Structure formats: structure tokens, C-alpha cells
Amino acid sequence: MILGQPWQIIAIIVVIALGSLYFFAHFFKLGRLIKDTPTSKIRSAAQGFVELEGIASQDHTPIPSPLSQRPCIWFDYRIEKRVQSDKSTSWRTISSSRHPGPLILDDTTGQCLIRLKDAKVYGGIRTSWMGNSPFPTSLSVDRQDSFLQFGNYRYTETIIAPGSPLYALGSFTTKRPIEGHSREGAMGSIIRRWKENYDDLLTRFDRNKDGKLDDKEWELVRLAAKLEAENMEQDLINMEDINYMDKASGQPLIVSTEDQRDTGRKFMWYALFFLLVFAGTIGYFVYIMKPFF
Image (cartoon, rainbow, N blue to C red; front, side):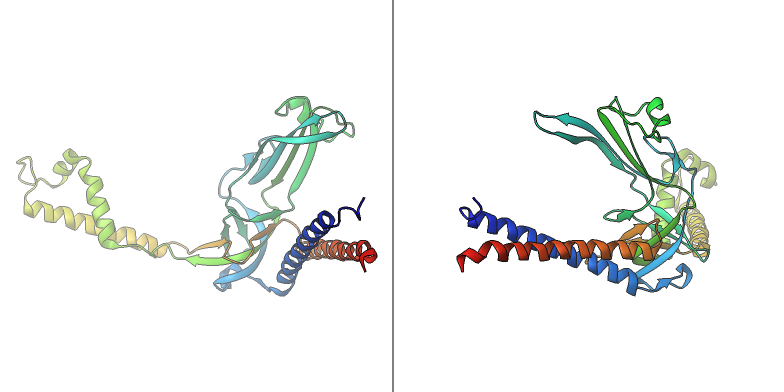
């Protein structure tokens, strides 16, 4: 049967071989990046592609995770329904969501906001359990650690808790709050805001009480706005720099709660697996092609 369909088999082999070769190169590159990129401190990190290690910090009260209500600063969940056919059983995802972030990495020398768009997040606290409703009930949550699990719905949730170890590899940028600030633009915004309450503007600056602002009174308005804009500018100068990590074009953004060595080894094991798949596929191709030579 195989030899009667050589071109179909060859097409499948080519797809598997190319796919496994791609994933081998992908995970091997990630493993090498983690191994070869030195860990930086936020305070002295260079602008560009860097590696950071610290803990997951928070600037707000932890949020309850959607399924188990555990306190966290990030979550990812999936709800699946059992689908039965005549010959097999499969699971169909009916709901899923992921917290958009950002995460805050603190390494004692500073903090960095990790923007999670296009990020690959690994690790965290993962739990999976079953139940009989499209959304987990408190009863099913209470028995999520039970050895005996049953039901037609499967719930999977991963969270990152405050204080968890945090590793990040991506594009690092430091921005000063004063950057992009324009004193003239700030003055214009302040005056426009004041004009929205014209009666209050008259109360403050209509010195001759004629119900309108003349040229000299408008000069007072502009002077007051200038002083407020200068105070705003000084506040921005005194603010701490803001550090970001994003995904740069052509480079990954990896976030993990695991030790960086464990994360790197995991990628190298993935790479080895796909290399073996590639080698096995090529070996099978040679085997089935022998009768043709």
C-alpha cells in the first residue's frame, strides 16, 4: 500500500522533515541565546537585547485568578469540553484567556516592565482538574487536588504569584519621563483645560470684573500656565527612569519563572527531540525508497 502511493508518502515525509528541522533550529537558537547572553542588572543594563533575573513584583493588590480564585499577578487559563464520537474522545476548547500584563521584574537595583505582547511565558503554577459545568464551581475547585477526577469539562490554569522568581530575555529600553515633553505643548493643554470652566477662569483672572478677559488678563493666564508647565516639567525631571522590555523584530521575548539554566536545558532537549524526528524521517524515507533503486 505504501509503495502504491509513493508521492503522497514523500509529500508527508517532506512536511515532517522540514517542520522538525525548523523547530530544531528554533529551539536550538533559543537554548544558545539563554546560555550565551550574560545576565545584566537593571540599573546598568545596556539598551538592546539583554537577560534579566529577579522576582515578580507588583504595583497593585494581587488579582484573583479566574478559575481557582488564587491571588496572582498573571494568569493563563483554558476550559475544554469532552467531545465523544463513535470511535474516539477528544477535548474541544470552549474558553480561554491570558492576562495581558505587564509583569514587573525587580532585581533590587531597579524594576523593569515586561510587556507581554508576543511573549512566550514558561513555568508558573499550573493546575488542571475536571468538573461537570462549563465554568468551575467552588466544589470542583476545592477538589482540584484530588486523585480522582471526573466530569465532561477540563479546566487548566497557570498563574504567576507575587514574589515568584522571574527570568526575562528580550529587548530592553530605558525611557526618561521628560522625553517627549514640550513646555509649550503643556501650556496649551493647561489653558485648554482651564477654558473648559470659563467661569472659574474669569474668577481667577478677570481683574477689572467686566465679565471678559482683555489682552493683559490673557497675559496673566499665559504666565500662570507657564509656571504650572514649568512645575510639571520639574516633576518629570525628578521622576525615576522607566525601564521596559519588549519583543524586538527578529528576536524572542522569553519570560519564565524557572531558573535560566533549566529553561535553557529545556529548549536544548526540545531541539534534540526534533533533531531525532528529522533523522528518523530521513531514515524512513531512505528505507521506503530502496525498492526504487
